[in-house]
Length: 323
Image (cartoon, rainbow, N blue to C red):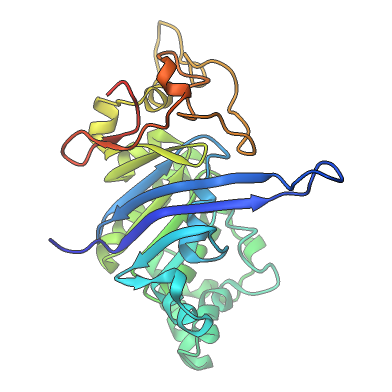
């Protein structure tokens, strides 16, 4: 079997907060608390969950934009967390990220062409003339005119700026591209265009995607597999079609029920319908299963023990005592 391109194992990130009292120990915010998954070459893995569940923190840990508390990350067999500063700089050519807000991720004083070519300058891979030519080439790759090279970000729409951000990420020809809510700030019609572009580019450049989103209707159509996160834990992983057809974890079921549907008659789904209460604080997460405080099927064991991810066959895994 071919080794996965990305392997994340028991990844943990705890942020130490300011102490609340003079003699109290600093509390820990458990943003990511022991997650493991892998991504095959050419695959798109979706990370989904409510805001604050640890999706974006996971992305930054994979890239080592922030240092993990513990765990391991391997990209194409290379231990990312063991790399020296010089080794990490070289490895980052292989993994890039596209952020949620395209305008804030671009330098407002720098032309879009210069922004696209900046990674080449930073890594010392091309001189000024080569950067100019490559940037114009990649503008056309993402569906923009090469003549836009000298324009500034504020002269573009949100969708056009996101195309620029994608071009900047692609110019180093990475193997892994992390897409952190890449279409959530865009209009619905523009979202479809960007998703179609990303799909085409994946085939053209043999890219592997980690796609982060809270919009399950988007993830369903774009991702091959989906990992569902709740309070820093993965509660279910499955093929996209399998998860939507037969979700096993009560949280996954609630997320899917909350997807808006266009109906002439009948009630509309409310936000996470069927769940009780609010998301607990990651500073003081519940004992046992972290979802048990909101679960309609909770049992005594749920508050006492943490369920492991259990393999249900065909790569479908779930962390729930109901199974």
